[in-house]
Each structure stands twice: as structure tokens, then as C-alpha cells.
Image 1: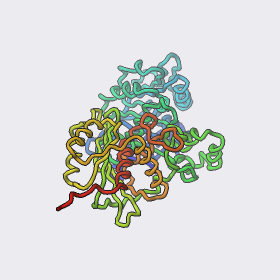
Image 2 (image 1 turned 120 degrees about the horizontal axis):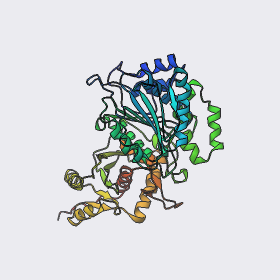
Image 3 (image 1 turned 60 degrees about the vertical axis):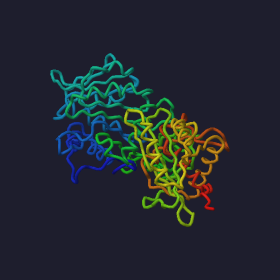
Image 4 (image 1 turned 90 degrees about the vertical axis):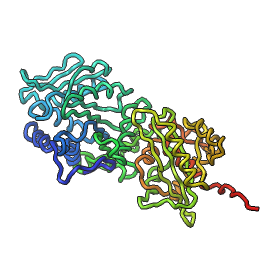
Amino acid sequence: MPPPLYAPRPLSDPFLSWGPHVRRWAARRIGLKLLTWQAWVVDRMLEVDPATGRLRYREILLSVARRNGKTSILRALVGWVTEESPIWMRSLNGSYTKDQALITFNAASVDLTPLGCEANAAGTRIGIGYIGSPRRHIYVSGRAAGWRGLGQDLVMLDEVQEQRDEEAWAAAEPMIRTSRNGLLLAIGTASVSDHAVLAKRLYDRGILAIGQPDSDPRYAAFIWEGVTDDDDGIRAANPATADDLLTMDVLRATRRSQTPARFVSETLNRWIVDPLMAWSPPGAWDACADRGSVAPITRPTFAVDVSPSWQRGSIAVAAHDDDAERIHIEVAKDWPETGRPVDEGAVILEVRRLTRQYPRSVIGYDPQSAIAAAMKRLADEDLPVVAVGGTEFRAACAGFLGHVVTGRIRHRSDAVLDSAVRLAARSEDAEAWRFVRRRSAGHIDALVAATIAVHLSEQPPPPRPAIY
């Protein structure tokens, strides 16, 4: 049962995995039969790269709506490590609070103490293991600075959306560096909190990995997300409905029992800052998807945008089809997040190339963006670059929404653009609104660039030089 958002595909068919070993151990030793979706994800998480003999993935995000049985996956992994795993001896479960750590600890204790394991719940480092055995699973909570120095084979960050900074990931990643099959697994649900910094970044990284798996080959994201608010969206975010662990009547009722924000984040597992800040109706963007859409070569318009932190950048292109009924958009050039700032020189070099290749086209930019100063210098050279800001940018945003709602936009479900669309928030203005970076749940440079490109595509073409 693959999730709606999943990256990447197995290396072979059939593929090598330690997952079946985990599932058989769980059924044999603790009587735990994993649900269909749980079995699927365990097999994919523990896929082996036949070229190296190691686990294919080193870092994984598992994101699914609440109450679908994430804890059962942890129970199976903890027990397998503690008893017989040939690839792991030491494992750790990190939680933001001790109460959360105790939830998974108590579940594992019920499984393993009847088998003879010792479970110690004292102090901030709770542990489970056999007396005299080097195998050990520990639970830690609180500030992640205290976890450093603990070498591990498997590190699991439970309820990752509760982590209010990236300290836990920074502390956990070095723990697995010397392990041949080290794995860092983040598990959680979408959130409406502005403090869910780590979960937001892992989600954004996952969306990009889905579209560009070769750029991040040892990272995988398994995301069950409902992009619409109807029954299809609920089922997409709640795979446990297939095994009747959850029923549709109960999940439908959460639309009334929860606040709109909680329903979207916890039942649909969809990232937004606040439903009131969502810029388009649910499902409208996905309805515009057409993987076969091709940009017409006549008078394309471009726009460039770079995130305020210089972590990402995009150039988008927009072009009308021959009868002007549809507007094709796509990301023409992407500078992904690499841990280093985007090279301003590379961006400007690409802009110059486009002005030469498409001399009748214009290239837009937001005068408040990080790349604005460099674009203004190009304007001083009389290159066809155009600033779209202030009231004009607000009009561009409103026009873009109108085209999405009416289905006039056509896009190829590009991972970079899809990510920006899902993470974007609008300003609080009821009418003259605009996309707002600081309220958004991640980078929206691709969406800003696409919005400006579409706006410029609807303006009259620049006058051609007259011949006398």
C-alpha cells in the first residue's frame, strides 16, 4: 500500500530488504501482525542496496495521520534490535518530552519483559535489554544536547513535529555515522504550529526528493497526505482504514469535532500554517495537473526568485497555448537546498542566458526578494528584466489564484513547484492579498516565480524596434 507521496522506487523488483525479518520476528515473538501499510513501509525502509550490501537509506521521514499505528512499527523495530537483528545492536528513541518517551517505552516493555528483558524507567535515559547482553535500546527526552556522544545504529525521533528546533537532528545524525547500516528515522504528523521547524524541513526535503531522487539518494520520505477534504483525502492520509483499524464514519466526524486546523493537520496529515491562511481551495491545484503539458515556444515569460536565507532559488516559465485558453507553467531552473547559499553569480548567469535565447521575452522578479539587487543591476544594463512588487504583485497573486480555480493553469506536478504550493500561506488581507514567506511552512520561491511569470505572460509584448 504505497502512500500518495513516496520517494523513491525500489532498486529492483523484487528488492532486497530486512523488513520481512522484522515482520516475522514481531509475529513470532510478540504476536504482532503488522497492518498492510505498516508491513509495506517496514519493507521499504529497510531496503538493501545490492551494490553495497548496506541499507539503502540513511535518513527517513515517515509521516501519516494520527492513530494509524505508527507505534506498532516502533515496537517491531525495538524488539528486533533487542533480540536478534544482525545489522543493529544499539538503538535510541528520542522524544521532546519524557511523557512521550514513556508511551513508546511502556508499549515495548509490555512486549519484551515477558521474554526476559529488563526494563529500566528511571532517570532521563530509559532503557530496555537483556542482562549481560550488549544489545540495548534506550529512550531519551528533553534537550537534545544531552544525547550527544551516544554512538547508535538506529535512532528514532518520535512525534518529530514536537521538536521546536533542529537540535535533535543535529545531535542524532552524528550518532549513526560510524555504523555500517546506521539509520535515522523521523516519525510524525503534520502540524499547524509555527514551532515545528524540524518536521517542516524534513517534509520539504522529502517533497523535493520525490521529484529528484538522485539529488538526495540516501534520504526517503513516506508521506500519507490527503490533498482534498473529502473521503478520498481522508483515506489517502489514513492507510489503516484498509485494515479497519480506523473507520470512515469516525474520521468523517473529526471534521466536526476538531477545529479546521486540527482536522487538516491531524486527520488529513496536510501541512499548512493555518487554514485561514491557505491561498487556494483544497484540490484546486492538483486538478490543474497535466504531466503531458508542454510549454509553447512562442514568447515564454520567465521570473526568478531566491529565498530570503539564500537556501533555495528558482526560475519559472509561463507560456500560453495557441488558443490562449491554457497557461503552461513549470520550473525552468532550480537551485536546491544543499546546505550552502545559492550562488548569486550562477543565477544571474542563467538570467543572462535566457535573455539571449529569448530576446523578445521578459524576466520578472520580486523587488523585495534576495536576488532583487542583482536584478536591478541587470535592468541598469537595459536587459529585459521587470520588477513586480507592491500592488502589482498582489494583483499577480489574485490573478494566479483565479487561473488555478478555473483550471486555466497547466502544470506537470513538478516536485519543487508542488512543494511550494503546499507550503505557501497568504497575507491576512481579505481582498488584496499576497503570498507571505514568513507565514509559509517552507520555501515558496518556485511559486513566487511562477506567479510573476504568469502575470507577465498576460501583459502586452514589448514593442519591437521600428524600421524607417
